[in-house]
Figure 1 (tube, rainbow, N blue to C red):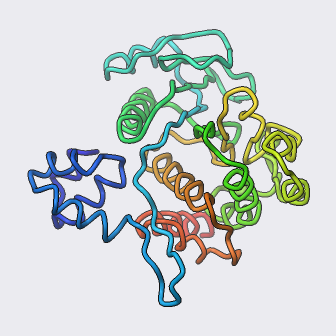
Figure 2: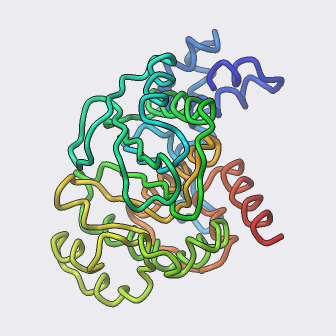
Length: 304
């Protein structure tokens, strides 16, 4: 991915923007691009630092992705031994294990009884971070595709974000923003993941009253009463994470990466902001143009 950006036929400014969006520091970008730190800093200041609008109000700018996260990918049609061999070939530390919820320092391949189809499995990441984490994830997706992993409606994609430093305001804003925007998010995901069509990713819309009334983080984690929801607050109790279960199963890196960046942008936006209008255009408020374009294209594809 980094090599593709550096080799792309675009301006230095665009390359710098893309590298910053992936989580590289300004110093690292300067070294990769072979340019002065000042040049990179100017791009960063223009495109990533907070600006103000004509009324003098703070205007949100997406931050670089340098977050700790975890990924769970469900699929089938590949034996665990075959997948492990392919992953090891690509330099991924991985083990085949019994079903468990323990966070490991390596990727693990486990059985998941909810998946329909032969040789169903779930591959679970260790704690990943920023650009290095995305690069590992890209290799895992490559291995899955090399092994002809299949996806059906019983498969899901689960993303965990570190929430250990969340304050009450950000946590509440995030859950309420997600509940408010849930029907919009549904439009760029398949019908099997919309509303409460799927037992394993139920709607949280009907719990907004409990979310609003929560006065502590513990009360917030109880505001959505089940973990099989589109936004799972229960994971905070055990892992200090917030889990997003809304997305359909996929082994396509481009889909997963854009979903992760969208979620990251929403988390950052929610640190001190609530969405004021519930429509697709609102996504422009807190996403980079290329992420918004991706989401819009997905919506159009699914509506066709």
